[in-house]
Length: 176
Image (tube, rainbow, N blue to C red; front, side, top):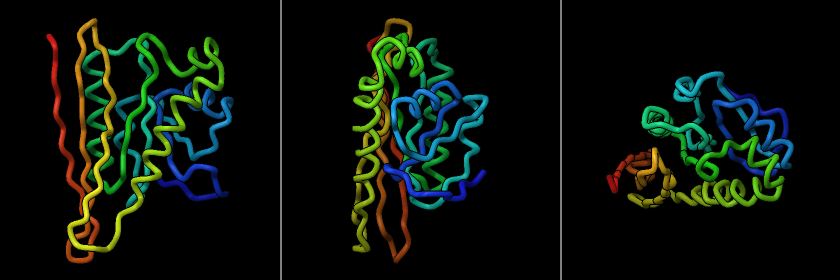
């Protein structure tokens, strides 16, 4: 699926989610950005980004398991391989974005989302100089079943022979 621009947004970032309620929560909180949701987390990777599109994957953190986290990370990897600049954001453990809005209010949702959106916006500073690299940490710390896993994905963007290139590095650490 491709997005045809209908208007200008406050934030030039696409927010992807597997939950329609999450998208509604962002809209209710006043976040003005392109927003797309899929009926299934497995379908996020099928989104067709344009080259250099900044995508923030909004993943819930209420009933996470290793398969869910793996699926979200796989979507980020696939979207990056399609030319997107990708990041992941999650609410506190045990929450989804809709509960966050209800329990903590719109300000809490904005305080989580806006810094992540701004990180993506600021990654656009790729110049045409050969081998210039922009790094972005795109996976937050997630807690799964009481054990902490530090997930770090590093996306390197650079210009090589006049073409935008990207590389994706994934590292994981578990206290288990």
